[in-house]
Amino acid sequence: MKDFLEQWIPNVLALGWYGETGWGTAIVQTLFMTFWSAFFGGIAGLLAGIGMVLTGKGGIHESRKWNIVISKTVDVFRAVPFIILLAFVAPFTKALIGTQIGAKAALVPLSLGVFPFFARQVQVALETVNPGIVEAAQSVGASTMDIVTTVYLKEARAELLRVSTVTVINLIGLTAMAGAVGAGGLGTMAISYGYDRFNTDVTVMATVLTLLLVLIVQLVGDVLTRRLDKTRVR
Amino acid sequence: MNNESDVVIELDHVRVSFGDTTAVHDASLKLHKGEILGVIGFSGAGKSTLVRTLNLLQTPSAGRVRVLEKTIFDDGTVIKPRELRALRRRVGMIFQGFNLLNQSSIADNIAFALRHSELSESDIEQRVRHLLELVHLEEYANAYPAQLSGGQKQRVAIARALANNPEVLLSDESTSALDPQTTIQILDLLKDLNRRLGVTVVLITHEMDAVKRICDRIIVMEHGELVERGALRDVVLHPRQAMTREFVGGSSETERSLAAYHLGGLKPNQRLFQLTYGVDNVDQSATLELYRRFGVESSILYGSVDVLNGELIGTLIILVTGDAQQLKQATDYLASMDIDAQQLDSSLVSSDDEGADDSSEERVA
Image 1 (cartoon, chains in turn orange, green):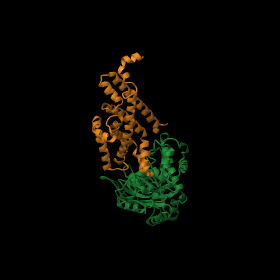
Image 2: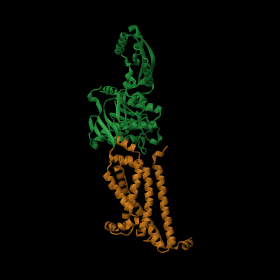
Image 3: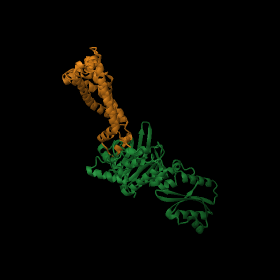
Image 4: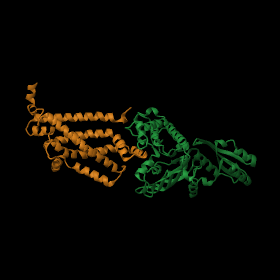
């Protein structure tokens, strides 16, 4: 068995499990980047998404001015290709984190990169909520906070979970891109240790692991989405 | 009953415009405590828009809205958000689409309305149970809306609307999505709540049967205007506007055609009368008395019985024949009776004139 692996994926084995270039380290880095940028970008995206719905046409705090401010901010970040965003925010990252290399530094561009995508997804998800339910909530004297939490977020929770799954998968793609410029993780494995050194086996292994990660996220997301949706209970 | 102190809703020249289109023109009305007012009209007549100004789900463009002794809108000035939320808890509302929280249990749907009440957690629980009993859904506390039928959902919505003991209940086409049997159940529930809790109800509908079943008073809307209004009985028995007649339809329409037909061939010594009477007046035989007292002959052209707000109302159209003296006596006698006698004349056939409109205004005050 060992001989067989030595023969077919020598470079994969050479990188080892632990250590700076190990597979275990790479996986942890990818998970670290995905989790925290999903967290920061997610909060920002959620707030922006909620903001766009509340201030949008027919929203409970309709305001053309604020709607434009939020949606234009989102659009500007969304318009910048991620690979360029990486370079663009580098000085800012350095000022904030102290370095522009490594998984931690990558959180800044990753969060900024995922936030506009998620904001738009959240907006679409929240707009699926029947406006009548919002009105009914208003008619019993609900506050803005009640309406955001119990009406919008709770009513759209299955839809929000679905778009979150899509966003996280998208984010795993972004971490790989960040890996290309030294963020670490499976992206760095695939490109720096695989592609750049003509070690195809490393690239293939990194791809397989990334794919696996995506599949797991999708599966968990789907199961939770189905469980959460009370409109399907019978 | 109609004194100023128990006015719960007052609209004063309210107008609602969306851009260039005006959904409600110059609407003024007063509603007294404990009344059930029906607002009827075809879709697009502005009924929903009108009723939504009562809890400011729709902000008017002009005019004044007073609800429960609070001026919530006065020519562009809107009540403060905090006060508005407090007021909305005193004005329940139910909708055509039920609008329940689909991801919350039935109990949570009702408890949602109580979030800002002063009740403790356990008191809220108790109140929710009580409300569920009130709408006969005790066993569904932990179910979700998707598991309920349309009628049950509307009952949950009613329980939610009643959670904060509102003094007013607004019903926006609340039975329009329900089958006829369920519609009757919901209407009777509203009537029952009105009787037992003294809730004032505004019922928006395009179904005349709903209005006939429970309303005390009725307003007919067309193209954003309040075209006719009055006590249910008056409006149903003597509709003045073509539009109202279309709604009242049925027997009234038949009566009218009959009357119109006979008015054409009426001899100088003949008069047509429409008699309407409650079930307690049936023992007075008008036709017999007319003959016995004045020797006036009368023949019955048409008769029907209708149920209005739980009361049986009979209608007769009689053709009275006699000389001038006799006809005068007959007219006076009929007017003096407990029953409602209206002489039918040609104004009835074309009654969409200004005069009819003015007198319909009078009926309200």
